[in-house]
Image (cartoon, rainbow, N blue to C red; front, side, top):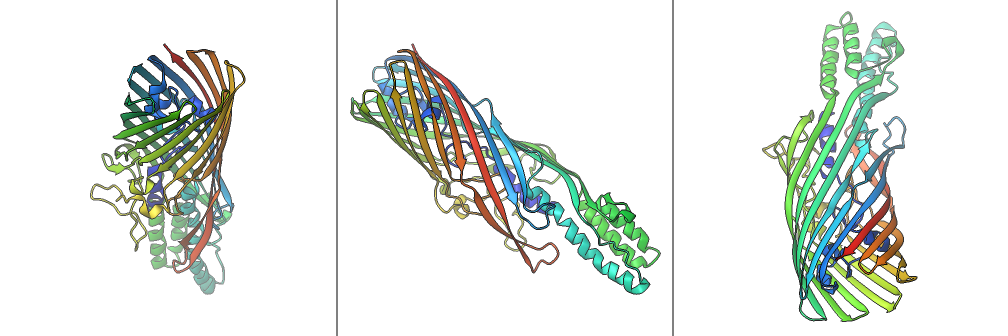
Length: 507
């Protein structure tokens, strides 16, 4: 069972707490974005991230944007695996990020602009499965039919030889204490240089230095089975088998030895397990931007972010399962991304924006691992880490998102905005796991802007993300008869609320 847990928990290596954007990329990078849901043609200070070439439309001088988002997400997984205590059974986790800051600074001087941005470019929260996940519980649930099957022959033998059925096989349930908590933060430190070629065209070159820190803490302890009351009731499965072995000594020493061997194996497989580890790494993202302004009322922003190679290194405190070999390395890349934005102002008080993002997922490495086709177990490298593979086998297509937004100014001081964002994930069923799953989504949002004066603006926004439920069909060998397959379904769901507040200041 410990090998089974090792296989399942390998999926936790790619834990992510995504809020908006691609599979591992956050694009919710300003309070203005929260109320618009699209900023790819931005001519504001948040263009440091969304449209660095568009910063040339700012006035000369220094500009600063400070914002924070408060993000609350609920993840729910339901499994109808038949050996679970309650099937279907649900497992929930609360993800929250109370500190999700974006800091942008720009110095504009005639035909040049120099800018800096600090963003949580990936992750940014923590997921806490206080009651574990299906992957934690299924190997334990399998103990009941396995022990029942192994003891039924012993019961039948004793019934035929003594005329009495001892009922050793009458195990009715199981219990465990299992929990997993993971956090992931990808911080991006971005610098850009923008240049205005003419009133129509400006360009930008930039780079983002990305630091990654993933933390994993979990345990699987106190595994018990519900044995018949006359044999002690609820107890550790190995304890129960040792009792049966002792009973068999007076009947048949050979049978007692076989039961005791089985007890020793079960004892080894059901020992308490703990994980306490972190992974850290860095990467660099080159960035190219172009801004085109055919007229005062029309603006087009283009940006390409290159593939970011990130290699993570394990720092392990506790690892009962050998899941995180200390010092071992693994990949957790960020994909290349193309963004296109169009801003149009049909009326003096009305502004419209549309934006499109395309993520090059299939050419990146997201920490997925190779699986041996014979044993079904992950392939190990010489340093004890999992052999990783690229995303081709886990993606049907690349992820893309499309957003539209509008703003209406009631006066020079107060404006209201609203937006809609659709994300289409390209993963297939092989990608989905308890901790790392990607769902297509639809987001609605809105908010207000308050212009205290020409140089100070307050952005307030709220979003609600509606993810499309994904029912994944799973087929695994029956723990009792490996020639028989068990078909069941794991269902993955999420919902997210985002509150954003930010202040833009020009000097």
